[in-house]
Every structure is written in C-alpha cells, then in structure tokens.
Length: 188
Image 1 (cartoon, one colour):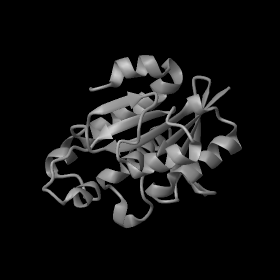
Image 2 (spheres, helix red, strand yellow):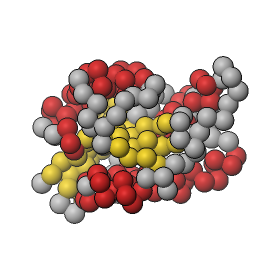
Image 3 (cartoon, helix red, strand yellow):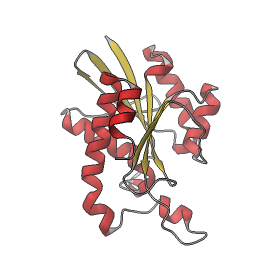
C-alpha cells in the first residue's frame, strides 16, 4: 500500500487558529472531518491517518512552529519510510490571489519561512507543495498583520469552498499523480 505524508503548515496555539498563515492546518482539519478521523498528539506534531482507494494518508500538523517545520517533516518521512515523491506540503502563499490553488513538484521557498526550513533540513527543493493564495492586500509594513490576521468578511464567505477544493486536490495527488492534479486544480 502506497503511503503519503501530507503536511499542513501552521503555528500551534489558539491565537493562530483560523489565521491566513494556518491555512495548511485548516485544510488538513477539513480533510480529517470529511474522513471522520481525529488528530493525535505525537512526536513533533499532531498526526491523523486514513486509507482511501489503496492509499494510506498520514497527515501531519507540525508542533515545531512554522519556522522549524523541517524537523517534523524529516522525522515523519524517515519513521514512516515515505519516499520524497510522496510528500505534499500544504501552505499559504502571499503571491497568489485569495483562494487560488497552485500545486508544484518543486521550487524555491518564495520567502516562506516554513518552506525555507524544510528545504534546508531535507537538503532539496524537489518535493510537492500545494500553495493556497492568501493575497497581498495590505498596507506597506503590514505584511505580518495580514499573514497572522483572520479572514475578512468577503474571504470568510468563500473560504469553506476553497478549503474543500484543496482537500480534493490532496486526495487527487495520491490517486492521480502530481501532473494530473496540477492540470485539474491549478489556478482554479
């Protein structure tokens, strides 16, 4: 049975819950709810597992804080013996309009501290990532407030549908492969 490690990036703690920066956690929480499973606190993060169409999904929400995510990713890849090509990291992206989904098989961190740390720890940029657009509608010098802020009223009205679409992209990644999933979901 093929195993996949799905990592949602975010920060632990109630004050970060439902912020733009925690969209990775929110998408994994949504998928767990759809599969009627719960996360358990394990080493370096909260973990939930489910099987679907001959695939095992191991979902990880690192407890290391965003900027040290690589430690948790590396540990769970090793402990579960999951190849790098079966890793998918779900993260926010300032450079994409709100709700836009972009899957890529590799690439730079694009200024994202969580991805920067994963790249450093894994010593590669060659792993799949699902970027969820949070937009860049903020005043000069207010980037941190935007990223760590809650969804505005307009975004809140659309967020559930965009999260659901992202969760479908995750299952597609494991079932249909990266290229097919990119064709189906990118920019939509």
